[in-house]
Image 1 (cartoon, rainbow, N blue to C red):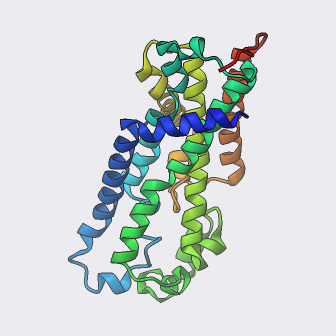
Image 2: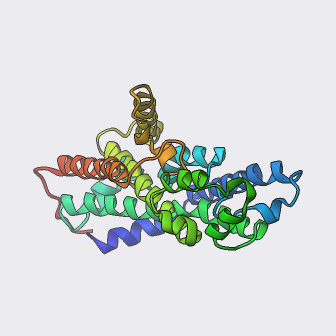
Image 3: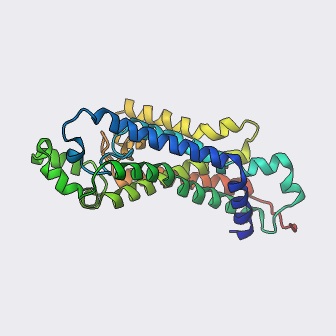
Length: 281
């Protein structure tokens, strides 16, 4: 990897207007998911006392806007990161100022930048939403709140939730850590989709909208196919919620995410096969 490329991409990222659009969209989605949960509960008696803490009410826990965020976020993050090659191709920067490294190192450095940035930016809406939930709902261990709620006291309901989460111990006893880990899993998934968009841009850059949304649309089509085939546990838009309707496993998540990362890497290596660019900056 080339550090100078990282610094150049970082400077370009924070100086562009797409960064501001991403932050604004993240705040809107986080606030929308918060009000989606909190507004219907104003008429509940003792709604604050009966809540199960901020993690249970976060956008990762069954919010419709939270599910929509899972589908939209790769495209929003991609606005900031995946068009690095398109920008240089269209402005002829890569011809006037080719990198010192080989072509392989050049494109791989950009791919690594896309992966890292996409992973980190994925945390923004979820942490904002969790902060709002912390202010609205009392802190406390999820397990104790779970056992004291009258409507959840039976063992059947306890087992129902335990078998639907990736990390039952964290889910019940350390909810904030559980939220962070789930957000990290979402970040790896978003990074994989953005990596595919970047790899696609190496081969086709005439229409940026296609490059940006094609991986997400392809995955939505796969989810519909999984649903029709009865493979609902493979639907990560549901499985990556903290309490999904159709429980999945870490293996199923890992295989799908790994295929995205491997596919992006293979496409970049295919693009760079055979030639090198060793000229001076």
